[in-house]
Image (cartoon, rainbow, N blue to C red; front, side, top):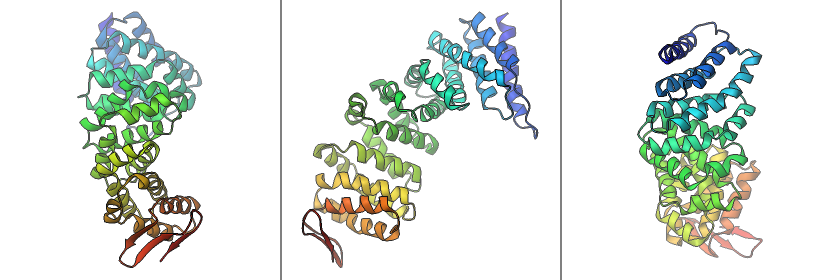
Length: 347
């Protein structure tokens, strides 16, 4: 019966969670997944069983220990069962929550498994679940965790970077702004999508009403988090395609955030590189008073001096300095004078 199968799924899930605490990890067998998969196929309309089965798959994949070779084959087959559960029960919060958890756990098994998750329709299921249940923290957390894995492949950009996809991702950042882990994941997702050459995806980021605002707010909230500062800087750099956007970013405090990121992470060459690159893109569209008020030139030079051996920091720093107006003072005793397009004097 469905009740017995549901109870069995919960038992498997519970045992996997408990076994994960053992000193010696246990062997995970294909029999477990076959039993879960068969129960899902026989009782497709039974929402509580589908929820229990998705949770069991999640905990099975996430548990420590070895996996039998033939388990992987059965896991590949179970991806479609999780998708079917999500599609069949779109209004069930527990099914959607556990399905997102299962997608995350499956996508971490291997790169090949992650590709299969992405091609199965799971991305669309995740986005719909995020939009339908914005108040479920664990659902949003697992959903973002899955998208972080899947966005590593450029072929998934189009499916993730839809208008509804960005709505789900950016709304999640707003809803859980105080959750640093979720904020970091969302910034990573948007940064990856910003690298795309797909016009529709790039346009969706730029035209989203509050995306840039939320990213900059996140940089303000977590100045010590280098991952958020790097991702935020990269996003600013990649979407600064015209003076209107540059001015908008500056008005939201983007210059201040980049300058602060450079100060807070002076020894982190990746933060310095990304911040300099973002400043390089923004400077032409920003008023001199904003640049001077945030000591932008000073911190670029400090960065270049601190990372003299890092060619990427040097390239981005020099490129940013060349974007300054013909003459601008950048500190009490330092000013920049650009003599030509190929020479730069700092005095």
